[in-house]
Image (cartoon, rainbow, N blue to C red; front, top):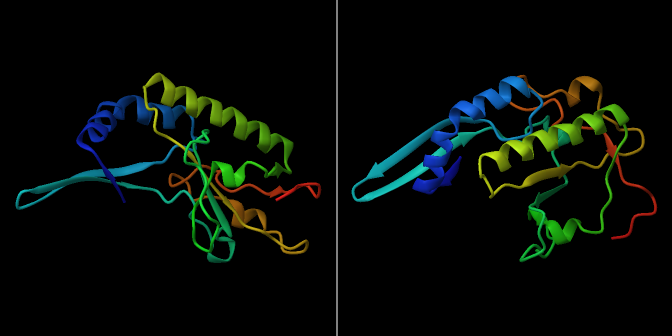
Length: 170
């Protein structure tokens, strides 16, 4: 669930046609999937909410050890790292994460370009990349089936096998 302002809900509702078309032509899209929008009224209060997919939905043993909310800016983008905290751009600035499968890497970059083009073309400026990192031991890599996302709920690019180069500094 996510709360929205009235203006944000208006933009979402006016974008539904292009939004659904984007998913029809880009099944691998990493943009959040919205399942419903609601306005809740109680006495003199009202609130707009959307129901959307969990972009980090995976098997419990693959839950992320670290989560980053990346917006592509450095203004107010550092938090003190502690368990359960969603980290920001400056926490990620010295990290390198490689994607082991070159074909998947290219597909991911192509998908991100199409997604950002869609968001830009529809003047949706407040977006970010949610990146979850699950660390595996050398002999603990998940199987191919565990890496597959549920069809319609998430992109098949939502979970990729990656690596952190040994020369990385933190």
